[in-house]
Length: 244
Image (cartoon, rainbow, N blue to C red; front, side, top):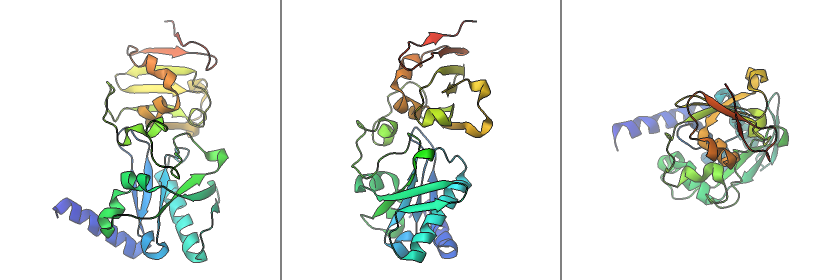
């Protein structure tokens, strides 16, 4: 075992000993952020995962959601499927297909040295549900879920895998984009509304690949020159270039 992996496993073990679980947060590359537990397996015989769910941009909120539901399940000793968390909303849990755990929850397999693990997805209810939240109860299929297609597909796009975009909650919840700007080589903005009027609390930074999965119509705009942008009134409209 190399030294880096040993340090990581020691850290996981320490967090499990002190808090009951370690929460691994993965937020790099073209895939949406996700976070999963290592350690619930010991008490619950399954782990939890929160995937996408970019309504919750604060990692501390993500950890609170996961810890709250974990502790509720441990204390109740039953598989309740709905959880209300003050200030953050309501959540359901659903058992995930093993194809997702094998792609996303590598730390669980490394720590427990097992070949399979049962896991449940934490899913925000409708008023906090964003389109980067996959249905993990069905087998992973990159052809069906374009937001997550790069989990097992070779990167073929011309921009770096870690390119991010500034967008807003409404766009992530399915409202059509109507503003598209490229301010610098890798600085993009895509809004469902007028960007200058969107409050900071509603802004989110997500992978550009996520927005391409949500709205494939923006593929045609990716070659726009730096400093240029497009707009449209409705999703059915053709994108028009902003005039200087």
